[in-house]
Amino acid sequence: MKHHTAKTALLTITLVMLVVAACAPSSSDDVVPAPPTSAPVTEGVRVYVDAIDILIMESFPVQVAAIVRGNLPNGCSRLDGVSVTRTNDVFTLTFETRSEGDVCTEALVPFEERVSLDVLGLEAGSYRVVAGDVETTFTLDMDNSPADASGETVQDLRGTVTSVEIGTDGIQVGLDSDGVSYSITISALQATVAGRWEDIVEGAEIQVSGPVDSGTEPTLVVAETVTVLGSDPDHALAPQDEISGEIAVRAPSESDVVTVALPEGATLTVRLQDISRQDVAAELLSEAVYDGVTQLPIAYELPYDPDAIDDRMTYAVSAVIQDADGRMIYRSDTVHSVLTRGSGTTADIELIPLP
Image (cartoon, rainbow, N blue to C red; front, side, top):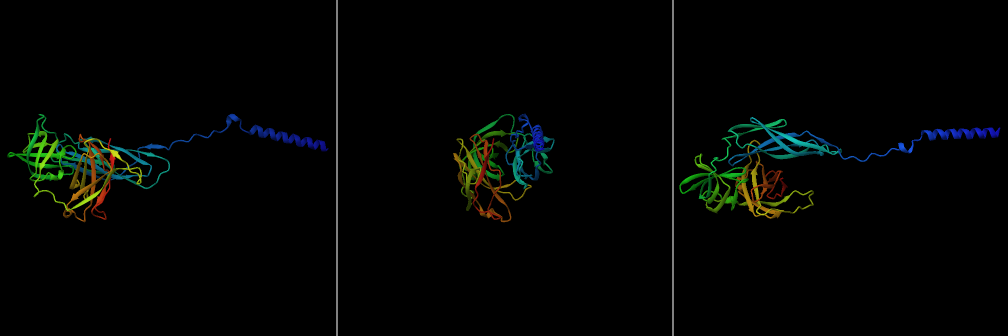
């Protein structure tokens, strides 16, 4: 009886082992962990536009730029660029965006982009700029055509400055040369100035070369080169205070310092502007030009007239660097507030490289 019971138990154990073996996966069915995947990338993230400001550069032909401010939806969103299309009198701005990553902060991320608008050859009139749900307008007071197609130029025209009108990115100068009146457009983006911009004042002696539009009255000269020969101290600016700081390329972190060698002949321009009103171009209050800048970081000093400052207004400094050919290679892209609303006379300016 005992022998029969033991035999039965052995048979039972054998059957259980066979069942377990049959249910176990074979080596060919072993589960292999999937390789890690990169963070997902999604194209076309929504952009929230808050405002569009228009900058009209006082040059001829006129140059126009739109300053777009808004927010990206979260910390994973990236703004790769802004494209512009024009249909009749409407400029439409389209944002090139993407979302990169799968763990994102949910706070809005502010941005500010400067977008050039191609207005060369447009007729005088009003134009609309549309970005998302926001739009604004600007007006060209005259046909924006380049100088006379005859190709006439003037070389080394000398004379005395009779008037100066300061714009956002340049100045319009009245010039008397041997009793003949000229209107000189000197663009900060296009002209090469030998001397200080601050010395181009009423009574100053200057020498100008550039294309001529003889169809205007007085004759218009779009300056390519300007040499300041002398200035009248009775008319010269006499600022009493100054803004100072350091200009550097934006670093990956606050503890890093990026040293950049600049091309030969580079020029640094630092400006103080009133940015209080969003519906008009920023008012230029002071400008300092540094020729022959060789590297960044660099210290700057920007004189200004304290009597021109209103505590109710908002002021900011900005900077651009141009190469010897006048091409902009670095610029500031954020607001660096000074003088009012809790800001002082010291401001470090960060630059970004341009392609």
